[in-house]
Length: 310
Image 1 (cartoon, rainbow, N blue to C red):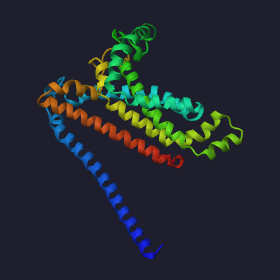
Image 2 (cartoon, one colour; image 1 turned 60 degrees about the vertical axis):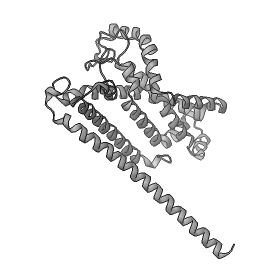
Image 3 (cartoon, rainbow, N blue to C red; image 1 turned 45 degrees about the vertical axis):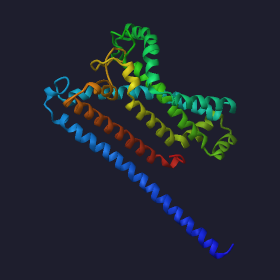
Image 4 (cartoon, rainbow, N blue to C red; image 1 turned 30 degrees about the vertical axis):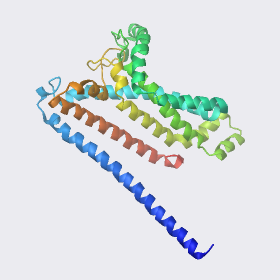
């Protein structure tokens, strides 16, 4: 190959690198600008509600008294969904990646990916029309037998439309997200690590515990945080399942609400300061989501020595 050909190829490669680098940087800057634009819009539109007279805000007690119950409802629903979905998702991901026969693993992985594509309104309709009536007798039993525990205090919702039902629906919704991401992380575990553990006499579970889970820890955290973001911001499924009501410590009573569902249910008919109030609620949700992601990135960075996938 002549020197002129090599020089031309090298120049072309450098030009390609510059184009790619510029495109990547532009995409990153665009994302930051969009995020800043959304934050600026929320702050500007929310300001009238933050300084409004308490009597002008729904409930008549001021914005913070209005937003506190639905923030608590949002966090409760998301937390319960994570508690339910995370162990199941990790177990399914481990089964697909390290236990199931290849043909079964392929089919099961396809089904999991398909669940992630189902629209949230379908989950909401399923929760409202099937899950809530089916689980209502269980709520009545909990209220009758464990009602002395505040989270199971009665009277139980006769329709089954309670915060616990919404949390179960959210758990089903985020399950495929956490499972799919965790499965891909587990499959990236270095084979030499797995083979070394097995060669030293470890059982399959011991190999998973010593090699797969430590390697996949940052990826699992990322998957869980992505699922948490979906649970915090979910709108239609929660709106269809929950009945509006006051904040209650019981998970089986009618009541409680989430920020996203509150906005979806009230925004079409809102006017004046009420619009600003709902946008301010969106700002609070934006801050919560941002804080959750910052904590997740900190945790992942702290454990980055385990990662080849963060």
